[in-house]
Image (cartoon, rainbow, N blue to C red; front, side, top):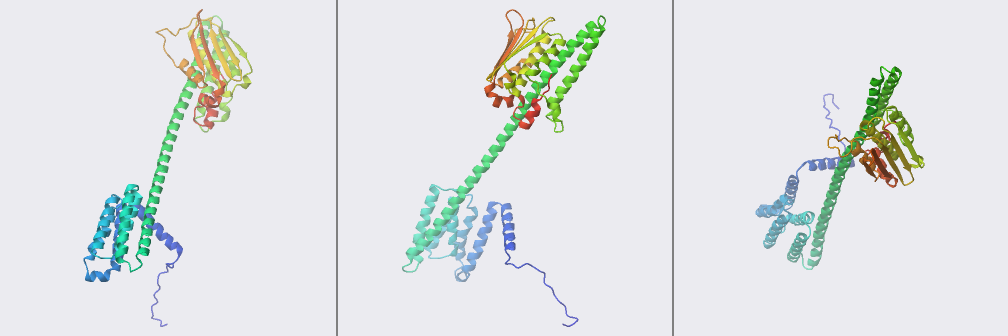
Length: 435
């Protein structure tokens, strides 16, 4: 080769026949099609068919240019085939009939199959039967007129098979589209129901935390107020008792903070599990009664049956009911009032009875402020399918009685301690601390 010769190097390209290039081209085509509106896709289809069929009949177009009118009449209506499938089929069928009258054969007759497919895919039922009958009539007319002698039956059978295939494919596409639509609708409904359940779970959990916070704050504050009043009364006469009372106030405040951390700790992922245990139950009632006794409300405890057979969540409910009942007595009953707590445990139920001999505020007192204590107690009891009665005794005093049905513990345990916010949250949220 001469030194001055120039060498031209063509860019290296992969062979066209490689399968991966074909797949890549098809993927790009599908992505581009997904971004186009349906009418634009149909317009591209009609343009392509018009160009291809015009190339097939290009020799006749020189002699008979009016064939382009039949081409347009057969293909152009397909642009609106998805919006008005029956109307488009009628227009294409009319153009095909005019073509038959003019004794002209065109490859654009494929538009009839596309129109029939569209009727099957977007309407179905009676419209498909009518369109199929019209197509079959046109097939018979075309077979008799344009097939060679002795081959009319074969041509009719072949064209009928093609029309049947188009109708079946269209019907299958309609069924598939309806199935996907139902699946999507079901997914949307399930997602909506899931969101509703989540909102209900959050609302129940908030109500549960509010009840626990009410019990903790109300009880401990009542004890602290009673001890502070006693300390003020005894500060000059018996300073030792004043010091002991104030230490008890501090202990009650620390205990209240600990319980609040246990209740609210479930809302924090970094809260150590040790702060959420143990869950107060029937065995901790003695400590509760000692605490209210220090605050000036002597109370006696009677437990019948074996508490170990009572589920933990039910024991927590019993503890909170007793705590709230004694707190109400401590706040409303006069000095010198005594209380008694009776708990009867069995495999089927837990019966609770809290009474006092004071003369506190009655339920009929119109000037009495209405709090959330008794409604919260009713909610806790109702979670176990039980009932709660609270009211004055005939001879004076107040009585709170409740019965928990342990046969519903499978469902009530979740509702009574942790709502429906999940098993992980239930374990932590139920541990509201021992009093």
